[in-house]
Each structure stands twice: as C-alpha cells, then as structure tokens.
Amino acid sequence: MYKYLLATDGSENSMRAALYLLDIATTHRKSIEVTVLSVQEVAAWFTESVEDVSHKTAGLFKNAGIPVNTVIKEGDPGEVIAETAELLGVDHIVMGVRGLGQVKVILLGSVSQKVIQLCKCPITLIK
Image (cartoon, rainbow, N blue to C red; front, top):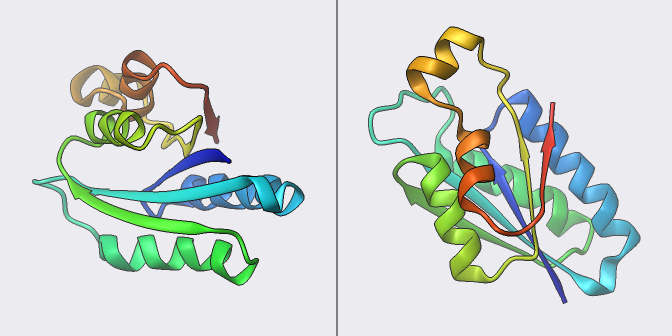
C-alpha cells in the first residue's frame, strides 16, 4: 500500500492539490491510502475551522471510495507536516503552496520550504 499525506489549509491551492491527488488515487484505487492533515497554527485566525477543512477534503476521497484518514494537529505547520509524515511512514506528500511574496517568506518562512528541508520522502507542491 502506497501512503500519501495530503497537507491542507483550505486554500485554493490546497484544493487543487487534493484534486490532483484524487486523480492519482482513482487511477490506482486498490493500492493507495490517503491521510488528510490539517494543522492549526497556534496564533492564526481562520475563516473556516480546521475540522471543516479536513472533513471537507477527506470527503472527496470517501465519495470516490478511496481509503482516507484525517489528522488534525496544532503547531508550526512545516514541522507538524514533517513529524506526521515520519510518524505515519508516508511514501509521498502532496500539498498546495500559498505563493507568499519574497518579503513575507523572509519574515515568516515558507511552510513548503520547511517541509522540503525536513522530509526525506518525495514531495509534490501544487500551485
């Protein structure tokens, strides 16, 4: 069984990442397991709850008959994604990128950049 971790924050690019992975999963239905991970940043304000985002995204896979789990955690998204990938022994991570400007990336850091640095498995970034 090939294990995918789909990191989602409810953004438009995260939904594109989910649809990308859904296309792969429906092609290889019997040999894929998907875990949808949503991370609540401690000091962040969201318009949609992390639980809603996670369950909405997982519903795409459930409706297609793809095995899916949901995981909701709190903390630094890049670190939590990397830790969860290691803990679950995933084979591949799929996630959307926000496309922050250069100044914001320097000041805030980039979740995708941190995941790339911390993870050993393949990572697909969707914009």
